[in-house]
Every structure is written in C-alpha cells, then in structure tokens.
Image 1 (cartoon, one colour):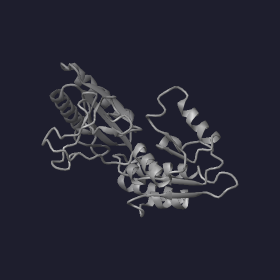
Image 2 (cartoon, one colour; image 1 turned 90 degrees about the vertical axis):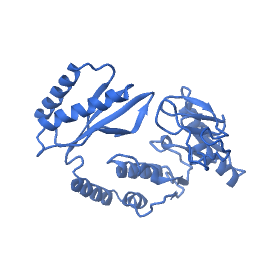
Image 3 (tube, helix red, strand yellow; image 1 turned 135 degrees about the vertical axis):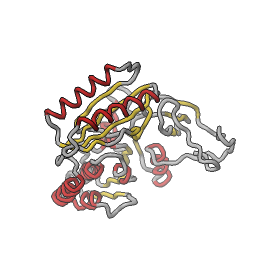
Amino acid sequence: MCRNCGYTAKCPNCNISLTYHSYERKLKCHYCGHEENIVTICPKCHSDKIRYFGTGTQKLEQEINKQFPTASTIRMDIDTVTKKNSHEEILNKFKNENIDILIGTQMVVKGHHFPNVTLVGVIAADSSLNIDDYRANERTFQILTQVAGRAGRENLPGKVIIQTYNPQNFAIQCAKDQNYKKFYETEIALRKQLKYPPFCDIILIGFNSYNENEIRDISNEMYNQLEKSVDNTLFKVFRPMPCPIDKIQNRYRWRIIIKGKMTEEMNRVLNNSLKEIYKQNIKDTRIIIDINPNNMS
C-alpha cells in the first residue's frame, strides 16, 4: 500500500489485493496464481512510501525468530505444502526432530496429536469473525476450540493464548471457557432472531461472466422474474449485488440471495426462471443455484 496516496497493489485478474511473499520477494494472488515483482515505486503517484501490511505466516516467522533467536521453527502454510506428502513431512519433522515452534494457518489445527506441545498461540482471532457469512461466529468458535485442543494432550499441562481486538465477543469468550452449551444457546437464539438456518434456508443464485454489462442485465432480469413469481409472504428476495470478491480469474461475480424455507414449489419457480433466462441470447454468463452454501463469498 502507498502511504502517500492510498494505492493498493491488486491482481489484474481478480478484484483482490496481492499478498507479499517476502522470501521470494514477489506479490501473489491466492485465487488465480498470478504473481509479479514487488512494488517499490507507486505507479499512481510515483512515491517511494510503499509499505506492506498484515500478519501472514512469513511475517510471523520473522518476528518469532527475533523474539526467540535460539528456538528452531518450522512453517506449514499454502507455500510449504505444495508438494505431494509435504503436509505429513512437516508434521513428522515437527514431532520427531525436536523442533520448538510450529507456525501455520488453519491447516495445523485439525486432528493432529502433538504429545509434547504445551503452549498454543492464536494470532488475530478476529479475522474469521469479519467474513461475510452468517456462520462467522460458529467457525471462529470451531477453530479456537480445535486449536486449543492441540495443547496439553498428555501428561504435561497446556496453555492457550488468544490475541484478539474483540475479547468480549461471545464466540471468543465461549472458546476460552470451552463452554459448548453457552455458545450453542447464544448462537441459536441469534439465528432464530435473524431468521438464519436452521430456521430458514438460504438460496444463493450465483452469476459469473467475462462481460460486466451482461452479468448485470441478466441478474436484474432474473430478480424481476423472481419478484413476480415468488410468494413474498414465504420468501424474501434480495436485490442482485456484486459478490464480496466481485472478480476472480477475470470473471465478474454477482449474486441474488433468497431467504425462506425451501419447498417443491420454490424449486419449480427457480427452474422456470432459469429456463426463461437461458432462452435469451446469453453469450457468456454462467448461473449456479446453491441451497445453504458452504461459502457465501
């Protein structure tokens, strides 16, 4: 990011910021694989006040090496597990070669048994709270309870330190106390109040296209059709909008969200709307309908 004018280096194919990989001195897109050399002069205002922000695993490893210069470390993230069996090799190395500190992304938290691990630290626990998904609290609670379970698994006592800017959030508090019942009761009450699953279904109609005008016209056309044919006492149809990441691999992305209990009648309405849309001269746009999708982005 340029601290003079605010310019941010973005992927030319996807509408998302590039990630700085310090060891290779490259900027990379984690969606399409695009990479380019690091920016030293701002292409917009020609300032040299370029700074890199964030707490990725490489940056974390550098800071840990400064804080604990005598400790041995190993990293497990998207860059270090590219080869076949590299995941198992890293874990076996950590277990069998007396490496002091394992640094990793969410892939280190699930299902691994480290008998001698007594301390687990979580950096920026808020990051999973801020995703555009009604399951953000649930996923945060899951991750924190799973990572906490890596410490003190055998005879030695374990300790977990969570770094967060939002320590009063109920998901973080319940994870700290390992209180499943309280988390469930709070989360289910919120979902009932906001009419989220399991009290309704979320129907996501996703559009993607190389043609920005076509995707806008088609998503609006489908919205107008649904508004006429959907029973608005049972379903709420939200206007089409660009997705949170509105371009990936040069394809624009829009979506329509519908809330309500899925029925055979609604299934018929959706199929009829698709047939009507595809009768038109669609050159490029693809449409996908997903019920209660795993990923809302």
